[in-house]
Length: 116
View (cartoon, rainbow, N blue to C red):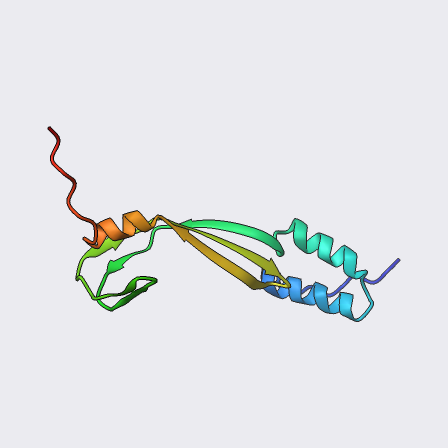
C-alpha cells in the first residue's frame, strides 16, 4: 500500500496551473497532457467578455481625426473584449465598440433633421 499524500489546502486555479506547468517543464508530466488539462480547465485559448463601462468624459479623447476636448458628458458604452490566454497570461487583446454610440453620447453628432 502506498503512503497517503500529506493533506494541503486547495490551490487557486492560477497556482494549480503554475504547478502543473512546472511539473511538465521538469519532465515529471507530459507537457502535451498538461496543456490539454489546462485547456479543458479554461486556462488557455480564446476568451470573449462583454462589459458596459461608464464614466464622464473629463479629458481629451484621441481620434484619427484629432483630439476631442472634454465634453463633461456621462456615457455608458457596451463593449466586447476578445483576448487570447496562454500559460495563464493574456497574450493579446482587442476591444470592439460602436463608435456611433460613443459619438452620440458625447454630443459629437449633428441633430437629426425633423420628420416631415
